[in-house]
Figure 1: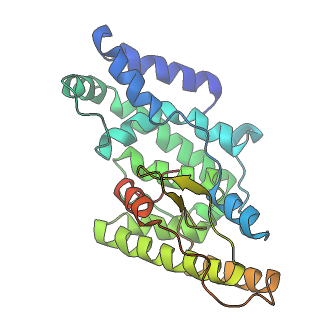
Figure 2: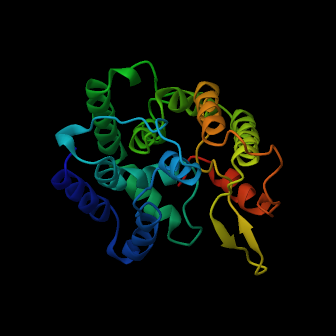
Length: 253
């Protein structure tokens, strides 16, 4: 995958549907039109540790942010597979039009996955659970772009098997975040909810470390804060935000 091919793929999305539906597709494309900032780096910065973020190699030595950016035209199909498309009179027409070109985009994401495995053999044992769905490949590639350790990508991959497994992983994520907050005394970023109340996101957000990674985070945090009293960090209303993340899937950033 390169920038030129990504632009060509985006143009094919628009060619696959009637012109009167362009606004809808533009809105859908906007759902994936962002530049991801690694949740791992966010945690490292918040509590002052290093060595959790995993550096992967990407084709052409592009940055992980640029590689994920190139994947955006393909991620439109991920949104459709996950049922995250806006509900409008145009929805069915757009989805039906795009279905005709999905096989080509599936081949493209498979090629991206092969490129990533070739450059990063540590990912070769993480097999997409649904090989005919684009989102299965996106989960692995996007995880690498975010710098998740291989064990964490594998853990998330397995959690994708069922909603119940995903919910268990989300609960475990909150437990991990709470424990790190107690030791470090740090909190996640603040935000104002719909009621005007200031709330805080968890320190571990949009990512669930594997147990191996969490033990390393825990070890480094205890070294960083050796004299910190083990009292809970100031309480904050974060449940509404966590429910929002769970509805979308914690992997979305």
